[in-house]
Image (cartoon, rainbow, N blue to C red; front, side, top):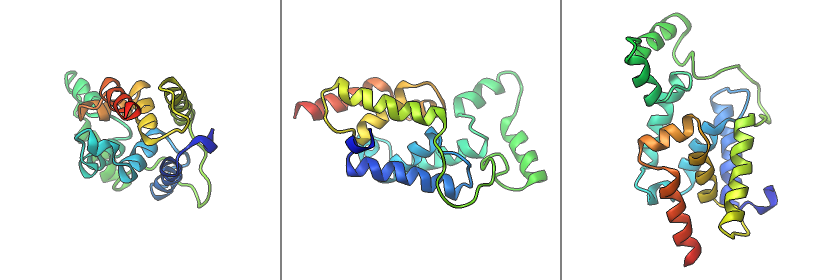
Length: 174
């Protein structure tokens, strides 16, 4: 599958490894893929989502241990103040205590099952639209199609499967 990735998408995947390493995460997850995609691909800007704003959203989600704004809002309906809980955890265990996960050394980080599903789905999306190469747009389609925090973060920015699919179909038609 990797041989079908465009150069840009290969850089995104390798960038996700670097993001995971910088965060001292033991594995590469869909949020690492999205973070790297935001840093390297212009597709999000095309959809009206500035990379720096998305990066802020992703940092906030990571700080909360992977809880999206929708999750936080739902919990607040039950009287749970997630920001207060995160602040207390950080007070006891240090800044970013919920963000990093296991501390890992340098080198290769394996992909989580969810990240593998995203990559597999990006291949299926490319095949479905008749593309011979897998591009950043196909990865974004996969991130919006599969349930999870990455899809939630994108949805809060107005980026959903249908919006990305329309963009991909327009590009394929031209």
